[in-house]
Image (cartoon, rainbow, N blue to C red; front, side, top):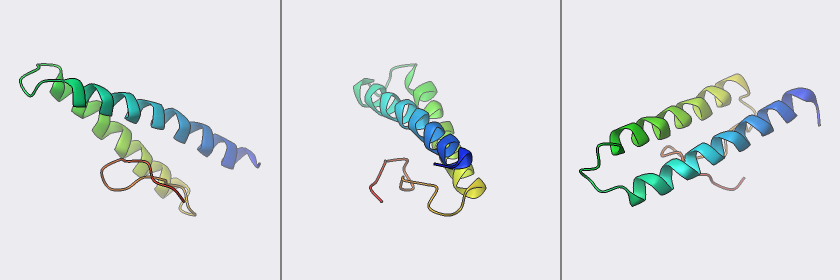
Length: 73
């Protein structure tokens, strides 16, 4: 695997972990939990990072939908 592909793959794996934990914590947080907005911002930032990655590596660089959910290729 070329270095760019490996770096992209490794970065996407780290973002998947961030998105996954953010989604779990958001789902568990009550609507009035003061941490919920922070968790939603973490999720939003990870989705933005995936979008940036897709712009940097446009050839099949993203495995997520518009909500940040990971999808198969």
